[in-house]
Amino acid sequence: MSACRDSEFPAALIPGALAGFPTGYRLMYNRILIANRGEIALRIIRACREMGIETVAIFSEGDRGSAYLDLADEAYCVGPAQSAQSYLKIDQVISAAEVGNVEAIHPGYGFLAENAHFNEVCRSCKIDFIGPSPEAMEMLGDKNAARRLARKAKVPVVPGSQGLIEDEKEAAKIAHEIGFPVLIKATAGGGGKGMRVAANDLVLNTAIQQASAEAQAAFGNGSVYIEKYIERPRHVEVQILADTHGNVVHLWERDCSTQRRHQKLIEESPAPNLPSETQEAMCEAAVRMIKNANYSNAATVEFIVDQENNFYFIEVNARIQVEHPVSEMVTGVDLIKSQILIAAGEPLPFTQDDISLRGVAIECRINAEDPQHNFRPSPGVIKSMHVPGGFGVRFDSHAHTGYVVPPHYDSMIGKLIVHQPTRGEAIACMLRALDELRVEGIKTTVPFHRAVMQHSDFVDGWVDTSFVERTFLT
Ligand code: MV4
Image (cartoon, rainbow, N blue to C red):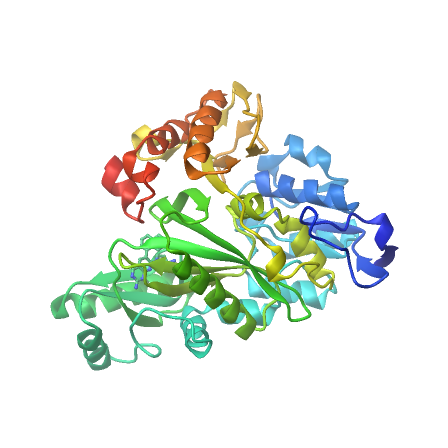
């Protein structure tokens, strides 16, 4: 790491609000490695360029020749197309970091982003991991431990067991106390894996066994706990930034209820029709949670919100998320630059009072999938692509005319984000931008998004997590 003068560095992360950094000199990275691919690799390369940081990219054989790799200063192949043999190979990624002589690694999302072991290997190799400490990451990766911490931090949790379920008798007792239906959740789970609903006594033990067996097979940990099952909840999450000096701020919330089988499709900020008292209480609860976790860097605190607007803590995501741009648009804060500065030991250059919420942002995930056929993957050559622009439109994508969407990875090829003064204007802007966006040669989720933007439930802001299944019968 080398010291550089404040005056040589663009201090402002939020327009107008920043006086700059308190110290005359500060430590900054010269070079970082991006342990990811696709649009998020491009997003991080762009942020680094603006900060004067050199970048080292990695790629698999399946991504060889991808145009965004040219924007990095160097790029190294880390293995064959399958992610298990490339992007997930810790030794290969670390080798690229050593050869590339980087001071830090940004993991993006997915792949190794929430792998506490990888995080620890980075530490032992004296490479900064741009994210939380391995200890905080490991603790929050255990949902039961995270739930215990939430209780300690006076953050509301769904009524349920105090800890893990030890035997059938105990499970039946708890289920009767909280009332059916109940939800059995794996402590190692996440994203819907290792969850089972039990409607009554008769199916309780089967549900526990199934959830436990699924979690054992997927995560090597079959421990489960019980919660009251909240029907048709909304999924609302709070964006947090925490520095290594004890400063923790929230960047308001995102509503991610428009999802299908735990795959988010549309995200927006702020959450529509959420009473401002609920919003404030939820954001404050998220800050308390992160303060108690002894956590630094970007985090998302996930809640579910019931029909009466009660909110309950679900889990913490210890990474930057796909949907981070909607929070960037409404607050003006660059989350990727913030992550890098925090990892380098900088104090946050703004306080909670500096972070306002301006307008409404909506993001549509553009996936190479056929929404007419159960969202089945549609990889292949993009014969032509035309991207939208204009006032309030942002398109984060590594795809272009001639790009071949590989079949080996997540099917997301871009994120269309709009920012407007009101939600009505944001929806109109999104519809206009969706019309401008042309992707020929493969199927995409564009027609689905067009339908949602015109659906009265979405327009009125009354979307819960079963909206997509209910409305589009998928
Ligand atoms: C719940 C729930 C209802 N009741 N917990 C799904 C994945 C994990 N992040 C938490 N999840 C849920 N937990 C209780 N007690 C409903 C879900 C849920 C859900 C949550 C967020 C986003 C989408 C979802 C889709 C189905 C179920």
